[in-house]
Image (cartoon, rainbow, N blue to C red; front, side, top):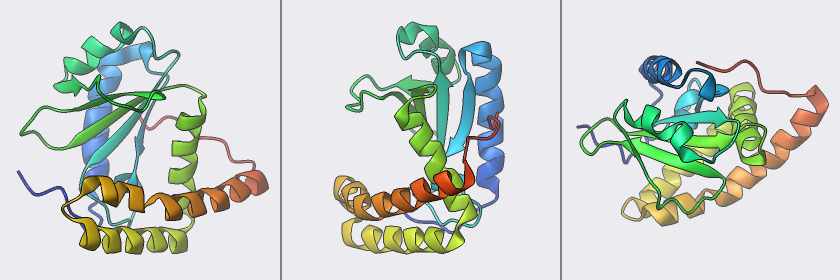
Length: 181
């Protein structure tokens, strides 16, 4: 398995990987998934990223987890009940499999919308995408052995970009497009 704790140059295969997993998720979940979206840096064409596919599944309600858990697990993903973020339910690949993070969020929630806004803004603003990529590279050099500090270090630039994205959303009347899968 390739080392996925690194910043890799953009790979168009990331979209293909998402589409394959997204199709399988759509088949398994059916109407239980209101949206299935490719999110995170691998979803932004040209963006260097950790080569980990992030998928956001939007559901009507997070509870009961049983409404979607077994369907996602049937595809080889593992539910992570220890996730401290109460705005989502989190699944990962089985050990030894290609890294994939699945974030299940309530449709229409702040967390769901913020994730889609961040992605869409960066897709439309390559200069901010470059700033973000440069900062991720810098942080990876500083904290290659400390994932928590790497993630924490991204906070200031993420909030700066989100402020810009907020203004852009108001100027354009941004709304999430169609689901990716």
